[in-house]
Image (cartoon, rainbow, N blue to C red; front, side, top):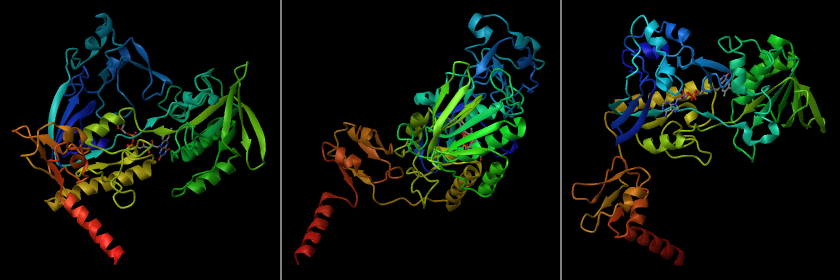
Amino acid sequence: MMDAGRHPNITLLTYSEVEEVSGYVGNFTARIRKRARSVKEDVCTGCGLCQEKCPTKVIDTSFEAGMGKRKAIYTPFSQAIPNIPVIDREHCLFFTKGRCKLCEKVCPTKAIDYGQEDQLLEVEVGAIIVATGFGMWDPTQLPQYSYGLSPNIITGLQFERLSSAGGPTKGEIMTAEGKRPENVAIIHCVGSRDHNAHEYCSRFCCMYSLKHAHLVRDRTGARVFEFYMDMRAFGKAYEEFYERVQKEGVLFVRGRGAEVEVLPDGKLRVKGEDTNLGRLVSADVDLVILATAVEPPPGADKVASIFGLGRTPDGWFAEAHPKLRPVETATAGVFLAGCAQGPRDVPDTVAHAGAAALEVVRLFNQGEVTISPTVAVVDEESCVGCGECILACPYAAIARNARGKAEVNPALCHGCGTCAATCPSGAITALHFTDEEIVAQIDGLLAMAAG
Ligand SMILES: Cc1cc2nc3c(=O)[nH]c(=O)nc-3n(C[C@H](O)[C@H](O)[C@H](O)COP(=O)(O)OP(=O)(O)OC[C@H]3O[C@@H](n4cnc5c(N)ncnc54)[C@H](O)[C@@H]3O)c2cc1C
C-alpha cells in the first residue's frame, strides 16, 4: 500500500466508489464518488491529535469486527494509506447536535472542514481490475453455534483483532471477562461445505485456524480442541505447519463441531462427533472461535451491474474461463483479482493480482484489440425503437442512436444472440447465426444422416 501510495504513476482514490462505467475496452469512462472526509487531505499531516481529543467513542464494527471502539473522527484501519482520518457524521457531536468542534480547535494545520461535500470525478481508463474481495458470512444463520448468545463465542476475524498487537487487548488473548482462557475450541467449516449455508470451501480457514491454535497455545498455554472435517493444508509449507501445530499439543477432533451450548455458569460446551473414534465427544471451554465462511461482499450486486460482470452460482464474479482465462471476465478490458473471483489466501491473491496486472500490460502493449465477427446487427428499417433489446443485453452493448433506433456497439457485443431472440420486430440478426444459416446446417446434418 505504501509503495502504491508513493508511486508517481498511481493515483489512489481512497474513501471513493465507482458509481458508473461507460465505454468499452481501451476507452472506458468511470464516474467516481469521492466521499467527503470532512478533513482536507492536502493539509492534514496525520498527527492524530484530533482522534486523541475527540470525546465520542463508537463500537467499530468494521476494522475491529465489533471487538473494539474508535472515535467519531478516526483512521479507518491501522497503517491506512493515506494516514488521514475521516469524520463519521452519524456519530460526530457537531453533525448530530451542532456542538463540540474539538477536533477543529486542536488541529494544528486547520485541516478540519465540516462543510466538505462529496466530489464526483470522471476518469478515462483503458482497462479495469475489479478487486473488491470478500465479505464475512453471518453465523447467527446457523443457531446451533449460539453465536451472539455469549461474548466468548467469536469468529476467526474477531480473533484476529483479539490477538493483534494493535487490537483492543494489545494482543493479549483473553475472555470477555478479562481472564486468560484455559480451554479453547476452534470449529472449522462454520457455514462452508454445508448444504444449509454455503456448499463451497472457503479455502483459507483451515490454515488461519491452525494459526489461531498456534497463537493460543503459544500465548496462553490453554488446551485447544480443534474440530475439523478434513485439513486442507494445500499450499507451500502448509502441511509442515499443520504437523508443527500437532506437535505443539493441539487436540484435533476429526468431525464438524455440531453444537455450542451456553451453560448456566456462562461456560461453553462444544459437542461433535469424532469420526476417527466413531463416538460423540464434548468439551467444556472458555472461548470458542468459529472459522466462519466467507462470501461475496454485500455490495457485489451493485459492482456486478456497474462493471457488467457475470456471477457463478455461488455469487462470486465469473472469470471468462476457469482454467484458461482465470483473470479475464466476459467483458473485454475488465479483469478480476483476488477474492472477488473466489476465496483465496494472500499468496494466491498476490499471484492472481499480478496476473491481472500483466493482462492489462499485455492489452496495452498490443495497441489494438481483436473482436469477434460474431456480433449482432440491427436493421434500422425494421427497428421500432421499443428498447426491449437494450434491457435484454447482458453486456450493455446496445443503446438508442440519434434516430431512436437500437444500435449495437461491436466492441461490447459478445454475439450471445439474446437481443435477436428478444426483438419483437425481428430487426436484429446475430451475424453467422442467421435463421437461414442454422436451417442450412440442420438440412446438411439431416442429409448426412439420411444418406
Ligand atoms: C479471519 C481471517 C484470517 C485470515 N488469515 C490469513 C492468513 O493468515 N494468511 C493468508 O494468506 N490469508 C489469510 N486470510 C485471507 C486473506 O484475508 C485474503 O486472502 C485477502 O484478504 C484477499 O485479499 P483481496 O484483496 O482479494 O480482498 P480483501 O482483503 O477483502 O480486499 C478487498 C478490498 O476492496 C474494498 N472494496 C469492496 N468493495 C468495494 C467497492 N465497491 N469500491 C471500493 N472498494 C471496495 C474492501 O473494502 C477491501 O478493502 C484470512 C482471512 C480471514 C477472514
